[in-house]
Image (cartoon, rainbow, N blue to C red; front, side, top):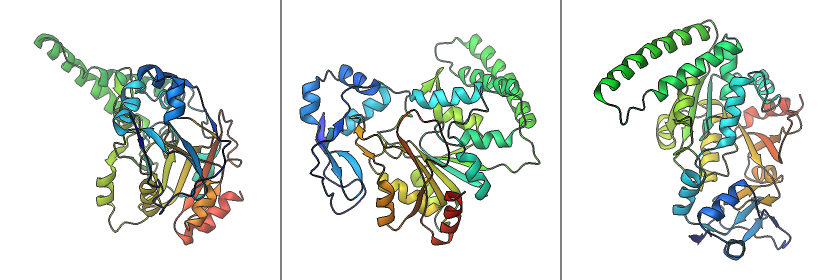
Length: 348
């Protein structure tokens, strides 16, 4: 069930383990309670098997001994396969389209960065896809809700298992009528005079991320987002192949609460920085590491980025978000020519 993770998650030669023995570890939360019950793990075994340290190089909290990949996959696919926080944010977007989940972040970024191509990593609902969507449509709250309901019904009607031939035919006929309504609705929603941002969701099938079973009303999150936000889902390797010799293809790339949901954060960040002019990162920085995570970054993470030669600024205070937990928002770039823009945003 457990294994040791000795290699540095940031591809450094080695981690510099802190001698700080006062690390605080979460003993209980929503996720841990499910893990302990489903895997039948007692508090004592949890404490003895999982060892945690602070790396002074990458400024992260890391569980050296943690769950093996088989159990990690189970945690994020069946123990709690639905990312309920992501779905809550999406449902809030439908019910309260004027709610600003990320404070003034989108407004500020949109003021200084002309975003024609936008990408996000792995979760379709935690980032800015809905903010871009709102700028691209001409619709009332009532029409947006109706559009959402049409898509729900269309995708649910495709679940045909167990139906007899006659029922299948009726269901298909009904669904084609719904599809025509959706297509008509899209023409009304999207104003052709406006510039539509091309949106891409980059996925890597990480065992440490929701997606395989992240469903709501029997619809998968990625399928739902693809339909409602008019975005393209690309696998990471295909995206790399597609973007060969196209450095800075993305004007902006978002990593929202997903950097700590991969075994290869270094590779993800490297991809984002290489292929985007600007990268916006939202991450938890709770000093108490939850053991549902292999690692967690800290408030000192920007220092690590600086040591790596990456230009970055902390926008957390600037965006004036009402935060439920301890988080950080960082805007970064790998290209010196865009540093002036980052500085302008920081001093806005």
